[in-house]
Amino acid sequence: MVIFGFLTNVSIAKLFAGGVLMVVNLAIGMLTPPVGICLFVSCGISGLPLSQVSWAAIPFVAAAIVSLLIACYWPVTTEEVSRILAWAYENDVPVTPWGAGTSTEGNPVPARGGLVMDLIRMNRILDIRPRDLQADVEPGVLREECGATGFQYATAEADRKELWRARHEAWETIHRAHPKQETLIVDAAVPISRYPEMVVFAQQAVDAQRAIGYVFGHAGDGNLHVVMAGDPANRTEWGKLEAINQAIVEKAIQMGGTCTGEHGVGIGKRKFMQMEHGESFELMRQIKNLIDPKGLMNPGKIF
Image (cartoon, rainbow, N blue to C red; front, side, top):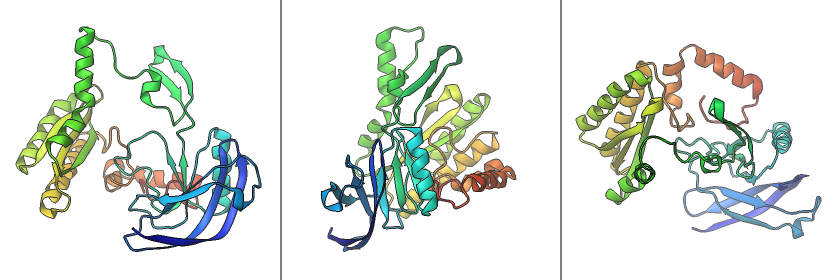
């Protein structure tokens, strides 16, 4: 890939504890499909001349990027988040947050360019309440940091570890079993009382299409996953997987469940929101507009 460009309209925002945010308009030409440009900047002195700022432009692989104005910032405190959002609002710059997720549904993809706010440095555990089975954490905290790697139950420790190993390696095992193929992961949830029915329906949907699919999930909270393998370049084959996903999610909603039990709405589940929430979906949109009238906060998701 050949990329060339030049800098215009350079501006440096106020210095925050986590570094300096630098927003640069880039005029870009490239000989391959656009992947955008992500600019990472950090320096320690406010007002540092451009010639002394350490910066590097690298490809930002996100097909949904439609703007070439892309910057990343790593806040450390809630106050920094508030200040950068205020700056973004004043300058009409979209903001997309990123925490410690997997982006299965495209939640943190900067669909309209702008600023990517990486929250990984906000990694403090604020409070743990064992009696409430609740932990209050900042968005950059990983589950392992809270000690949530498993739970105790009445079997030997070695057996517990083996069961968890099998669960943690499930996706990698499926992926390796089907080389040169990609996976499409279904994520939905139903009331626990309907879970057995949902599992049977999901397996029947896979079998009816003669697809490659593995049904499992988190039965304790009604969360169901189906990991399917196929070739995205084969429209007929991949279309069958998408049809299975559609059928399972719609069935979950009909059972009084939800289109996503774990992965979030993001981009992939937007089409199910009206079905799941009915008239209240418009109320949700109105509330979002009250908080974000310019549509700058993680645009292109849910609505």
